[in-house]
Image 1 (cartoon, helix red, strand yellow):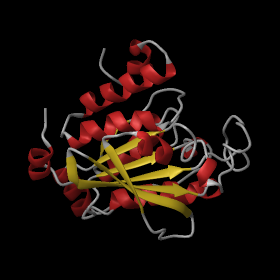
Image 2 (cartoon, helix red, strand yellow; image 1 turned 30 degrees about the horizontal axis):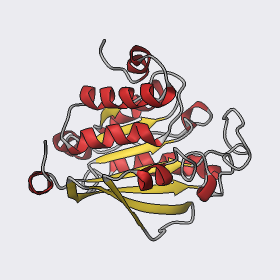
Image 3 (cartoon, one colour; image 1 turned 30 degrees about the vertical axis):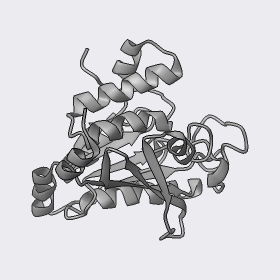
Length: 236
């Protein structure tokens, strides 16, 4: 077991998670209940304020602390900082992006990955797989920036339907490890993130993190673990 003091001494990490709010009117999603699918209402949104939305879910978890953050951009409707009791010096920033601005949220995700000197070692995109519906150019990075990303072993996660074939080419071009991706239709809810983030804080491998995501998904979705493993690309 990792004690808080030892974990703090070993690991001081930062991450940024971009959550694109579910939006019935502006995204190619299967329509959901109007209150959950209002992309301009973070408080009630499926991916943010609902029972398994990022903010609500982590506020209920005893080992995690949610701290409100100031909003820095017009498309960001809410934000919080997340810390774990065993890793108090590490911080994970969550941002709720207006569902109507999904293209901007994808661009923000890729832009953050291209910033090879960014303090964020892990960057995530959560929500509807926007690349299924729109084209977002993967702007080139310098060889130096790509090399720096590879040296730092920076990681990207995309928890959205079938994210691997759409986002992994972008990751490779930028020098980013595809830490956790998906290979099928799924619900991008926060319990998946809990398994991933804890594995990352413990410096676990991509396969270990994917397994933790699969375990959480199987538990909450009540599906066989083998099916969840396939979804997250865990080696069977």
